[in-house]
Amino acid sequence: MLGLKLATDPRWVNIAEKSLEEILTDHAFCEQKAATSGISLIIHHSEKQDLVEEMTPLVAEEWGHFRKVLKELKKRGLNLGKQRKDQYVNLLLKLKRKGLHKEEALLDDLLICAMIEARSCERFRLLSLHCSDEDLREFYHEFMVSEAGHYRMFIDLAKKYFPADEVKARWNEILDGEADILKNLEWRGDRVH
Image (cartoon, rainbow, N blue to C red):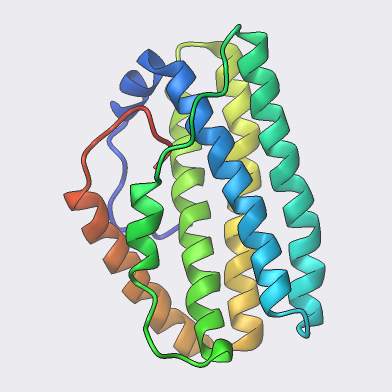
């Protein structure tokens, strides 16, 4: 369904479980950044009513997810650590084409958001299937379902504002670029991405 060109090795879960405080901290900040990205899309494209109507509940949901991860940290006697640079997202952002008009740049913005949601969905699926902690399997199953919906929403918005063939072509370029990023990115279990 997601069309990712490079799957995450399931052994990533074993490493993530050893750094539970780190992975939950990173997850919390990913949710906060997702809410911020939704707000940014609303601010920059406030004239697009469909986008505003889709982004508004997404922002609320992502902020709710941030709070849910904070609650999970607290339940486990863990603390929210420091936010770190998300190297994966920073490299994805470099895939954005330069010199585009705001309207044209929206396609890249929507598809990069879709990519982040797709990769998060894939990682949360792995945690929901292979994590040794049953509570965390359920916890991450819920997030997996949500991320899949967000991925689909961003793709659908792209198709609403741009021709389907243009969306498909650009999505394939981003999928290829993301696979290259992952091939060259240090393999870490303390990060969602």
